[in-house]
Length: 283
Image (cartoon, rainbow, N blue to C red; front, side):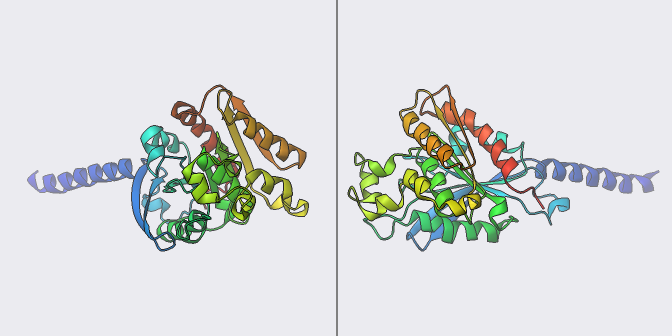
């Protein structure tokens, strides 16, 4: 009998280890990358939320769509994970979520300081680094971008300025009037004086109005929502009207809520659902 005990114990141990491995790798995982940006000249961390099953042996050849989730003014790369149930909501989808650091740079190449190149950073450094580190679908079919407030503005702007890079662009409570304002130091630093080239070139409403008609079919699918008590409700409604007039594919929702984290936490789940529907499935 003793001769059978050791093999039996080994089998039990292997079974337990296998079950533990499957349990761990079937859960959502989060990681933080300390990325050294040469364009901006500083470390810009970003968080990665990996989907259930990403680390399983059976998934090692699978490539996933990526949603870049931008934070708002005064936020940072970890704001989404700190203030929402992002990791829990991510468990419902087979996509990678990346939350980059944008400081208060409005996801724009700044007018005043040459090193403030947050638009170029996303396109030239962040996306290539994510594609090199992770098993991603490396074209627009599997790439989306979304955000709240400043990040919502940035996401819609990326959609119009770089439609070749994204198949989905989403905004929650987007600060869509940023280029018309002069009441904040970060806005002046980013866009310069009123009527500057940087303001005109990054005015998301003007970008939508002037986008070439013959290229509209090349645009990503746009999603935007705004709370009925949000101070940016009027600018979001106006932006949706522009999209309707130009017959640009989108959906716009006005729902109860304000410019606060409980609202963004609630709407985040819907944004993830729409993004997952619009981006390519894992392949």
